[in-house]
Length: 240
Image (cartoon, rainbow, N blue to C red; front, side, top):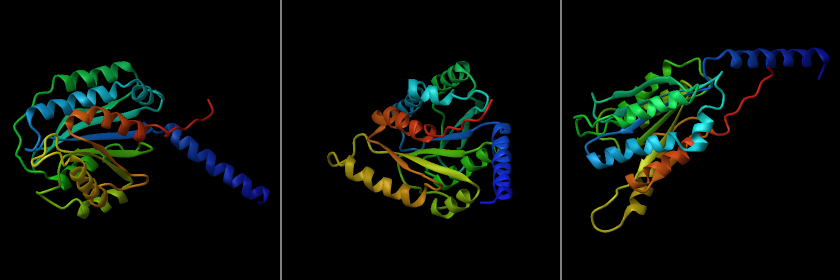
Protein backbone atom coordinates (compact mmCIF):
# COMPACT_ATOMS: atom_id res chain seq x y z
CA UNK A 1 0.00 0.00 0.00
CA UNK A 2 1.31 3.49 -0.85
CA UNK A 3 1.95 6.12 1.81
CA UNK A 4 -0.98 8.12 0.40
CA UNK A 5 -3.24 5.11 0.67
CA UNK A 6 -2.16 4.48 4.24
CA UNK A 7 -2.88 8.10 5.17
CA UNK A 8 -6.34 7.90 3.58
CA UNK A 9 -7.13 4.69 5.45
CA UNK A 10 -5.94 6.22 8.71
CA UNK A 11 -8.11 9.25 8.06
CA UNK A 12 -11.19 7.12 7.45
CA UNK A 13 -10.52 5.17 10.66
CA UNK A 14 -10.10 8.39 12.65
CA UNK A 15 -13.37 9.81 11.33
CA UNK A 16 -15.20 6.54 12.08
CA UNK A 17 -13.90 6.43 15.65
CA UNK A 18 -14.75 10.10 16.16
CA UNK A 19 -18.32 9.41 15.02
CA UNK A 20 -18.54 6.49 17.46
CA UNK A 21 -17.21 8.60 20.31
CA UNK A 22 -19.77 11.31 19.54
CA UNK A 23 -22.71 8.86 19.44
CA UNK A 24 -25.37 9.20 22.15
CA UNK A 25 -25.22 5.51 23.08
CA UNK A 26 -23.41 2.34 22.14
CA UNK A 27 -26.58 0.20 21.92
CA UNK A 28 -30.34 0.73 21.96
CA UNK A 29 -32.10 -2.31 23.42
CA UNK A 30 -35.90 -2.60 23.28
CA UNK A 31 -37.43 -5.49 25.26
CA UNK A 32 -40.87 -6.68 24.11
CA UNK A 33 -42.82 -8.89 26.56
CA UNK A 34 -45.67 -11.19 25.45
CA UNK A 35 -48.83 -10.56 27.52
CA UNK A 36 -51.33 -12.26 25.19
CA UNK A 37 -54.25 -14.36 26.40
CA UNK A 38 -52.11 -17.48 26.73
CA UNK A 39 -50.13 -15.76 29.51
CA UNK A 40 -51.97 -16.04 32.85
CA UNK A 41 -51.43 -13.81 35.90
CA UNK A 42 -48.84 -16.13 37.46
CA UNK A 43 -46.88 -16.34 34.20
CA UNK A 44 -47.13 -12.59 33.77
CA UNK A 45 -45.52 -12.06 37.18
CA UNK A 46 -42.85 -14.67 36.48
CA UNK A 47 -41.98 -12.81 33.28
CA UNK A 48 -41.62 -9.40 34.94
CA UNK A 49 -39.80 -10.75 38.00
CA UNK A 50 -37.58 -12.80 35.68
CA UNK A 51 -36.63 -9.67 33.77
CA UNK A 52 -35.82 -7.86 37.03
CA UNK A 53 -33.64 -10.77 38.08
CA UNK A 54 -31.87 -10.85 34.71
CA UNK A 55 -31.16 -7.11 34.65
CA UNK A 56 -29.69 -7.31 38.16
CA UNK A 57 -27.51 -10.34 37.48
CA UNK A 58 -23.98 -9.15 38.38
CA UNK A 59 -22.53 -9.88 34.93
CA UNK A 60 -25.49 -8.31 33.11
CA UNK A 61 -25.47 -5.21 35.33
CA UNK A 62 -21.72 -4.81 34.80
CA UNK A 63 -22.15 -5.03 31.04
CA UNK A 64 -25.07 -2.58 31.03
CA UNK A 65 -23.15 0.00 33.06
CA UNK A 66 -19.68 -0.63 31.63
CA UNK A 67 -19.31 2.53 29.51
CA UNK A 68 -21.24 5.40 31.16
CA UNK A 69 -19.94 8.00 28.67
CA UNK A 70 -21.45 5.92 25.83
CA UNK A 71 -24.29 4.14 27.62
CA UNK A 72 -26.85 1.57 26.58
CA UNK A 73 -30.37 2.95 26.08
CA UNK A 74 -32.99 0.49 27.34
CA UNK A 75 -36.79 0.40 27.16
CA UNK A 76 -39.47 -2.21 27.90
CA UNK A 77 -42.90 -2.64 26.30
CA UNK A 78 -45.72 -5.19 26.42
CA UNK A 79 -47.44 -6.61 23.37
CA UNK A 80 -50.52 -8.69 22.69
CA UNK A 81 -53.32 -7.94 20.21
CA UNK A 82 -53.51 -5.26 17.53
CA UNK A 83 -54.00 -2.33 19.92
CA UNK A 84 -52.28 -3.67 23.04
CA UNK A 85 -48.71 -2.38 22.75
CA UNK A 86 -47.90 -0.42 25.94
CA UNK A 87 -44.59 1.05 27.15
CA UNK A 88 -43.69 -0.02 30.69
CA UNK A 89 -40.24 1.59 30.85
CA UNK A 90 -39.48 4.53 28.51
CA UNK A 91 -36.04 4.95 26.98
CA UNK A 92 -33.55 5.11 29.86
CA UNK A 93 -29.81 5.71 29.57
CA UNK A 94 -27.97 3.13 31.66
CA UNK A 95 -25.38 5.51 33.06
CA UNK A 96 -25.35 4.39 36.70
CA UNK A 97 -26.79 1.96 39.23
CA UNK A 98 -29.66 4.33 40.02
CA UNK A 99 -30.99 3.95 36.47
CA UNK A 100 -31.06 0.16 36.89
CA UNK A 101 -32.72 0.45 40.30
CA UNK A 102 -35.39 2.78 38.86
CA UNK A 103 -36.22 0.30 36.08
CA UNK A 104 -36.44 -2.55 38.59
CA UNK A 105 -38.88 -0.55 40.75
CA UNK A 106 -41.10 0.24 37.77
CA UNK A 107 -41.27 -3.42 36.75
CA UNK A 108 -41.86 -4.59 40.33
CA UNK A 109 -44.81 -2.22 40.65
CA UNK A 110 -46.39 -3.02 37.27
CA UNK A 111 -49.83 -4.65 37.43
CA UNK A 112 -51.46 -6.86 34.81
CA UNK A 113 -53.79 -4.85 32.60
CA UNK A 114 -56.71 -6.02 30.50
CA UNK A 115 -55.59 -6.97 27.00
CA UNK A 116 -57.15 -8.75 24.04
CA UNK A 117 -56.22 -12.43 23.78
CA UNK A 118 -54.68 -12.34 20.30
CA UNK A 119 -51.00 -12.70 19.41
CA UNK A 120 -50.12 -9.92 16.96
CA UNK A 121 -46.43 -10.74 16.70
CA UNK A 122 -45.86 -8.90 13.40
CA UNK A 123 -47.37 -5.73 14.87
CA UNK A 124 -45.20 -6.14 17.98
CA UNK A 125 -42.11 -6.34 15.77
CA UNK A 126 -43.14 -3.21 13.87
CA UNK A 127 -43.85 -1.43 17.16
CA UNK A 128 -40.44 -2.31 18.57
CA UNK A 129 -38.77 -1.15 15.35
CA UNK A 130 -40.56 2.21 15.59
CA UNK A 131 -39.26 2.66 19.13
CA UNK A 132 -35.75 1.81 17.94
CA UNK A 133 -36.06 4.34 15.12
CA UNK A 134 -36.07 6.95 17.90
CA UNK A 135 -32.47 5.91 18.61
CA UNK A 136 -30.85 6.09 15.19
CA UNK A 137 -27.73 7.67 16.67
CA UNK A 138 -26.88 4.53 18.64
CA UNK A 139 -24.12 2.32 17.29
CA UNK A 140 -26.29 -0.80 17.46
CA UNK A 141 -30.07 -1.27 17.71
CA UNK A 142 -31.59 -4.50 19.02
CA UNK A 143 -35.17 -5.68 19.48
CA UNK A 144 -35.37 -8.42 22.12
CA UNK A 145 -38.83 -9.99 21.79
CA UNK A 146 -40.31 -12.72 24.01
CA UNK A 147 -43.18 -14.95 22.94
CA UNK A 148 -44.93 -18.20 23.85
CA UNK A 149 -46.74 -18.84 20.57
CA UNK A 150 -46.99 -18.07 16.84
CA UNK A 151 -48.72 -15.01 15.44
CA UNK A 152 -52.47 -15.23 14.81
CA UNK A 153 -53.37 -11.56 14.20
CA UNK A 154 -52.16 -8.82 11.88
CA UNK A 155 -49.31 -9.06 9.37
CA UNK A 156 -47.29 -12.25 9.35
CA UNK A 157 -43.88 -11.78 11.00
CA UNK A 158 -42.00 -12.98 7.92
CA UNK A 159 -43.65 -10.18 5.90
CA UNK A 160 -42.21 -7.47 8.15
CA UNK A 161 -38.85 -8.79 9.36
CA UNK A 162 -36.84 -8.08 6.20
CA UNK A 163 -37.91 -4.43 6.11
CA UNK A 164 -36.95 -4.10 9.76
CA UNK A 165 -33.58 -5.72 9.15
CA UNK A 166 -32.96 -3.37 6.23
CA UNK A 167 -33.23 -0.47 8.71
CA UNK A 168 -30.19 -1.81 10.55
CA UNK A 169 -32.17 -3.36 13.40
CA UNK A 170 -31.37 -6.80 14.80
CA UNK A 171 -34.24 -8.89 16.20
CA UNK A 172 -33.49 -11.64 18.72
CA UNK A 173 -36.18 -13.86 20.26
CA UNK A 174 -36.82 -15.55 23.58
CA UNK A 175 -39.19 -18.46 23.00
CA UNK A 176 -41.15 -19.66 26.04
CA UNK A 177 -42.39 -23.23 26.15
CA UNK A 178 -45.57 -24.38 27.91
CA UNK A 179 -45.25 -24.96 31.66
CA UNK A 180 -47.85 -27.74 31.75
CA UNK A 181 -48.72 -28.90 28.24
CA UNK A 182 -51.75 -31.11 27.78
CA UNK A 183 -51.20 -34.77 27.08
CA UNK A 184 -48.02 -35.25 29.09
CA UNK A 185 -44.63 -33.58 29.12
CA UNK A 186 -44.13 -32.61 25.47
CA UNK A 187 -42.26 -29.39 26.27
CA UNK A 188 -39.07 -30.30 24.44
CA UNK A 189 -40.81 -31.08 21.15
CA UNK A 190 -43.17 -28.11 21.44
CA UNK A 191 -40.41 -25.62 22.14
CA UNK A 192 -38.33 -27.02 19.27
CA UNK A 193 -41.26 -26.39 16.90
CA UNK A 194 -41.82 -22.87 18.24
CA UNK A 195 -38.11 -22.09 18.09
CA UNK A 196 -38.07 -23.11 14.43
CA UNK A 197 -41.02 -20.79 13.78
CA UNK A 198 -39.26 -17.82 15.38
CA UNK A 199 -35.99 -18.65 13.65
CA UNK A 200 -37.67 -18.73 10.24
CA UNK A 201 -40.10 -15.85 10.66
CA UNK A 202 -38.93 -13.44 13.37
CA UNK A 203 -35.20 -13.05 13.95
CA UNK A 204 -33.15 -10.94 11.56
CA UNK A 205 -29.84 -9.11 11.42
CA UNK A 206 -26.18 -10.01 12.02
CA UNK A 207 -25.74 -12.80 14.59
CA UNK A 208 -29.48 -12.86 15.37
CA UNK A 209 -30.47 -15.80 17.58
CA UNK A 210 -33.29 -17.59 19.42
CA UNK A 211 -33.01 -18.25 23.16
CA UNK A 212 -35.38 -20.77 24.76
CA UNK A 213 -37.06 -20.95 28.16
CA UNK A 214 -38.62 -24.28 29.13
CA UNK A 215 -41.67 -22.63 30.65
CA UNK A 216 -42.06 -19.34 32.52
CA UNK A 217 -40.29 -20.85 35.53
CA UNK A 218 -37.15 -20.83 33.39
CA UNK A 219 -37.69 -17.28 32.11
CA UNK A 220 -35.24 -15.55 34.48
CA UNK A 221 -32.35 -17.87 33.58
CA UNK A 222 -33.13 -17.70 29.86
CA UNK A 223 -33.37 -13.89 29.86
CA UNK A 224 -30.10 -13.64 31.80
CA UNK A 225 -28.32 -15.78 29.22
CA UNK A 226 -29.92 -13.81 26.40
CA UNK A 227 -28.86 -10.41 27.75
CA UNK A 228 -25.29 -11.64 28.26
CA UNK A 229 -25.21 -12.78 24.65
CA UNK A 230 -26.73 -9.54 23.33
CA UNK A 231 -24.56 -7.17 25.34
CA UNK A 232 -21.30 -8.98 26.01
CA UNK A 233 -18.64 -8.71 23.31
CA UNK A 234 -19.83 -5.33 22.09
CA UNK A 235 -16.74 -3.51 23.31
CA UNK A 236 -15.15 -0.49 21.72
CA UNK A 237 -12.08 1.15 23.21
CA UNK A 238 -10.77 4.46 22.04
CA UNK A 239 -8.02 6.78 23.12
CA UNK A 240 -8.78 9.18 25.94
